[in-house]
Length: 131
Ligand SMILES: [Zn+2]
Image 1 (cartoon, rainbow, N blue to C red):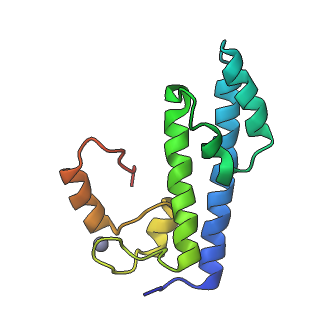
Image 2: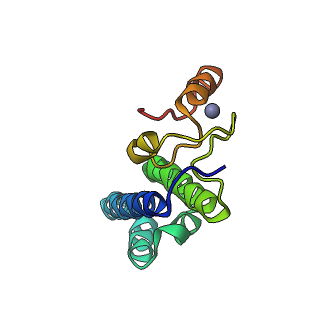
């Protein structure tokens, strides 16, 4: 069940778009600073790519350099997908609405805070959100 208004979704989507641009810039900077010619070529490719196809450009690359950014881009892409299919803003575990304030602070959230904390306890080594 969706509790978000169209306006709220639009605001969150803008947040995702901005974050995608930031991450793309970080990736380009990391790659451009690399000594590896392949990395520098990828930096050029990334400059012409939008965020949605960006992670596919790095599939065959040694991505330790940009691992964190790639993971976050994937989370953003997943959030966009959920917006598209109407699942966005609904907790993946308990199916309650995720509060708008939480989504504003952490737009790629898949779960409500209660379920996220439970999830973090059982998956202690996964990336945990700061909220
Ligand atoms: Zn939940």
